[in-house]
Image (cartoon, rainbow, N blue to C red; front, side, top):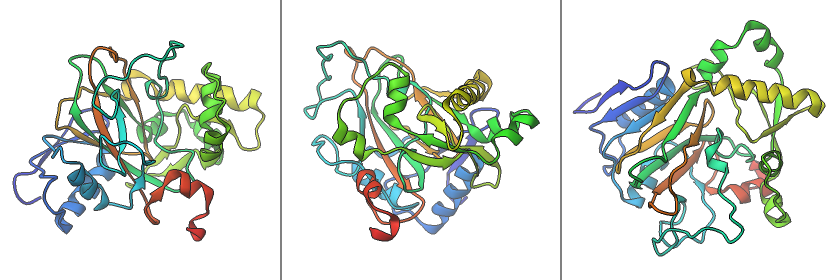
Length: 297
């Protein structure tokens, strides 16, 4: 790679750390080739000292695929980005809910947008403000997980399709969701468990949103999914990223899972912003894509 861009590996199995990449500059064909190769190899890349401009983040992400547009309505950040924070539109800490309910989604391993009909590619998460402790993001390379599976388990899972359902997953974790309109926006979606990653290796497309297996009764499917989840989240597969402002972490949703660790969310501010891209297709929100087939958009 020309210039002063360097890359080094942060975990024995995956994760590349990139220094010297200017994410505010126009993305050249050389940078695209370098970064596509890096993502195919490492699955997760940490870009240090990235631009904190929303428009620069969006432009950088768009160089690698069409955006999955976030639902509109957040005034604090540029439209199209997902707001991964504990802040109001005015930049203050969101107060506790009267019923004491705590966010649960991001403290379990998952892949972004598995309930979407469109093929999600990468997520680009950029840190603006980080707490002094906690709120790490942990990553698992599911290519390494597949490689480590016993041979009989590889044969068992080779051709199964997993049903991903946000609301059923919440129910399994003790959270009842009664908003039927929202439920319709995030329908149950089925995906093959085993797929080829960008580097040609087999990977598991999985996460806690997986709640069933096509054609298999729940009494068989759920124990199998739970067994795979427990195997995949062993410490040996996990990289824990300790954020600092200016970190942009990019991960391939097709061959990784991620999860946040807890922090004192009513004491410290956490401001991270996410762009997500699909493999192909027009730039539409995930909700709009779920209402139509790709041919109809």
